[in-house]
Length: 399
Image 1 (cartoon, helix red, strand yellow):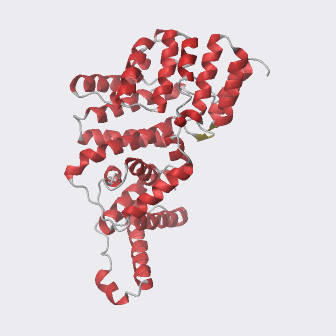
Image 2 (tube, rainbow, N blue to C red):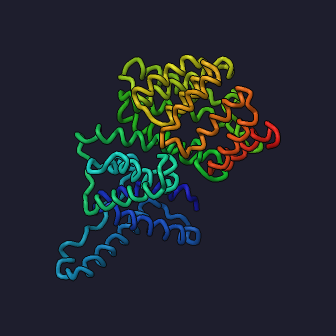
Image 3 (cartoon, rainbow, N blue to C red):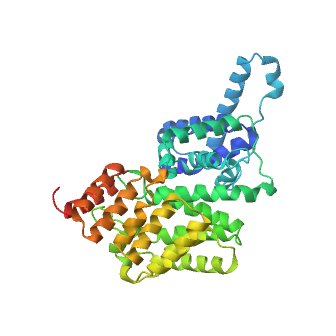
């Protein structure tokens, strides 16, 4: 039995239950029990002909059992027969994953809670992975998810068309963070989690099919495609990380690059400019350069200056430092990097040490670079990143 099948069906099953019964938290518990039952039964009995329907039926039974148990505890046996939730409706043939994304971005929740809840329910990320994506403590994310579920307890989800635009921004952020975690896993032995990048791309394609004229939806799709195009060259035959400047560009996916460039070119010429379009434009500059030396870093720096105004953030700040150093030299870049020290979101990030190490190496300070590489290696939980950073330190000689 494929774990990928259960992973892909879980959001659809959760959507069906929430639509029918409401109460996100209780429905999620019922779905988890159904998934556990499938994991135990399907290997022995075989995958049913209609696995989605099997899961919905099983989860619905669990939800009804929960309902009966809750009402019994509340001594309301006399009302159970009248109040018992209805049997599940016929299983829809459509994929409801995107609908669940929109439904989870409930207006009663704050944006951070919307994103955390949907990442957990739809993206399948752990609390720790979400925390690293947000650059905040794991306990903070756990509290956000818990509070979101409490706030939605008993709420029947609905999606009035008037609310779709205000929920869209949160949905885009969710998809972006899912893709980011898949592109560079924040922990573990693999650099990429292809199941996450593939799912994010699939969902944003589905979203663009519904909203073809939205520039930010198109920009996000372009950004994902242009980034995913480089994946085949990001590790060597041994699985070691290969930095962008050293990648074999003949391995890049030309069709994804062509599609991404076409999408972002069209969006920038027809829609108001937003942060995802600007990030896609930066990715396009990288992808269109035949060699690392031909990269137009001046254009990239200009785009980061715009992005810093439109959507400021710690990673934008750090990436801009890299572009600034490419244009003005490593010493100037180090001075810019020093100015980020007051940003608490960057204080614990290994990427600051990695950038500092790279700039120190370029400036000729081998000992300083070695120390910074090792500091970055100690801070990251990604084993491929650790190995790469340690190898860079080793090339600079013994401590």
